Every structure is written in C-alpha cells, then in structure tokens.
Image 1 (tube, rainbow, N blue to C red):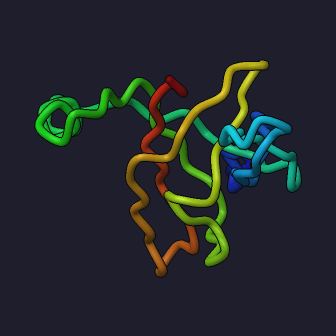
Image 2 (spheres, one colour; image 1 turned 180 degrees about the horizontal axis):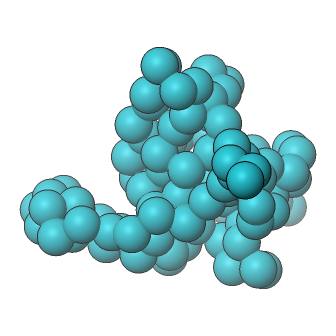
Amino acid sequence: MKKQTNNLRWQAELMVISSSLDEQDRPIISRIKKRDVFYQDIGITAQEKYLSLQAKTDVVRRIKIRWDNSITEKNNGVRIADIDYNITRIFTNSDTREMELSLSYVN
C-alpha cells in the first residue's frame, strides 16, 4: 500500500507587489507574476476568523505551501484561479519545511 507524501496538488501564482507612478503622478499598484507555487487548501478556524476581524482584515482562505524565506506579507500576493489575494499572516513550520498563508481578498 502506497503512502501519499505530497499533498501539495493545486497550483497558484506567487505575485510580487510593486508600486509606481503614472503620467499624472498617481500611485499605481501592480502585481507581477514571480513563479508558480503548489499548495494545499486547509480550512479556516474560528480563532483565525476572530483574530482577523480584530485586525480589520477578513481571512477568506488558508493554504499550505513549501517553505520560502523570500515570501513576505508586504511584498507578495497570491493569485488562485484568476482571483488575487493579499497575504495577511504567515506561519512557518521549520520541522516539515512548510508555510501556512492566511489570505484575504484584494480591495
């Protein structure tokens, strides 16, 4: 009997968030694809919902990806099925070399 060791079966795009100015000196926030990442959907707990509402963010999705130190809450976002998400919280588990990302919709 085979044991499944890789549960990261869905594919998302890791986006880099950068800001620039247009012709009228208005700020523009652009999202540029950095690379593809594989993820596993994990559920949102009631505690996660409660804490996110206190911080005035609404967590709508949590995913698990491979550990990457270059991913930050401020400079990165995720695109899943043509829907952009901001990263609101990152939890790293160094023993299993995985990261849990809490995602909210882009305003």
